[in-house]
Amino acid sequence: HDRHREKGRHSSENMATTSPSAMDHVSKKPKLADGEDAMDVDDKENRKIAKVAFDHETHMRIYYDSLFPAESMMKWLAYGNDLKHPQADAGFMQRREFCFTLPGDVFVRYQSFKDDKELRKELKSKLPSKIDIGPVFNVDPSKRLAYSGGAGSDRVFAPTEREFVMDIDMTDYDDVRTCCSAADICHKCWPLMDVAVKVIDKGLREDFGFNHLLWVYSGRRGIHCWVCDKRARQLSNEARAAVAEYFSVYKGTDASGLVKRVNVSNPLHPSLERALEELKKYWRETYLPEQQLLEDDKYAEPVLAMIPVADVREEVKAAWKRAPKDDSVQKWDELVKRVDKARKAVKGGPDKWVLDKCVNEIIFAHVYPRLDVEVSKHMNHLLKAPFCVHPKTGRVCVPMDPKDDDFDPNKVPTVIQLIDEMNAAKAAGKEVSYKETAMNDAVETFNRTFWNGLKKECKEEMDQLHGKVREAVAAAKPLDF
Image (cartoon, rainbow, N blue to C red; front, top):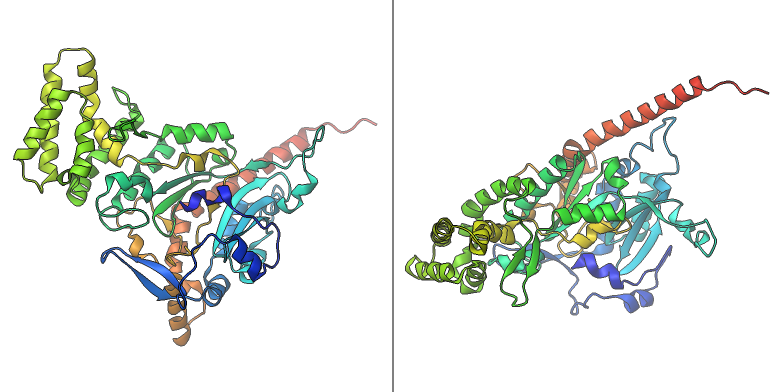
């Protein structure tokens, strides 16, 4: 997965230029055949990968110059500290780490920028293929070497705050989707992402009281969530791990590799009871008909294996042989009917307990959100910035509305599409701006679903703090000389 690449990454810190030879040395990307300078664009309906002509330097320079919404992103990351307000921290943004991935997989870490103009200038200069955002440190990251934290030193370079982030990747569902695998996605499996967003969004809001959630399509096969409440940004690593584990229900398979394991109780925890309402509807109306899960032994056998009582398992298997082979919904109904009959017939003991939760466990094991928990655990973890262009697909990492049931990753604008739209606007005598392209819709989604509410709260917090300072000053006694 792209998100694990930094474990072995070669970093080039604070570099201004990179020689071609150095870039070749650290490159981890497979070389293209002669004349193959292309960007992968997923065409899942035809199950093929199409090639679209792409010139990184030309197209990314235009993108960063005229289409990338640097101002919107920097206003968000400043959390009101860019305002001319008595309580604004003027140095806040210069303590935020940015990491650029340059062509050749060269990583430029520990950069910081005071405003959108400075960021855009560097983007146009270095033309990164990816931008990652890190934490806010206690000092400017570029000055970290002066804070080595040696023995007895109180000069330590450390993160002080960072959004709580979550990463959901479609490859983690490969064992439960029949239509695609690896980086492939299509309209049949993408609803797994839709239901994950709904379950986690509701859990973060209702169970943890977070309000400011930014959902972002990763540009290829996944989704990121940025939880930006002040309380979330200041969570310790231990608290971050606890929140991530709260949503960690699927635990892989047992030693046989066949039986899926889930961490659910009987009766269900209230958060899982609430999630189950969403999952059941999706499971029967969308997942089983689209994935046709029970029509292929490769996927049906692990479902049977989750029935914990052998006699019941054999009854279901026999019923499936009599049912139409191409009807997963009917087969599921047979499973539920027989498990329920056996559950009611058992008066007590271990069989009763495991049968009571059997049906729910199967549903949770297949369609409950699967998080990459490691991404969430640490304050200093880098995560791809919104509005990046995915280097493989050319799609923009656009913000998402968690209430939108119709999000289609295959219709997300690509950098080439945006440039074409901007050129068309220019030819029509209109303003050369992202506002004349599909990027405008992405920025409006960012503002409507996330930034407008957070901006208001940031301003109110600063006003309240300023009021408290004034009250404290007014209440202070004059110095007695």
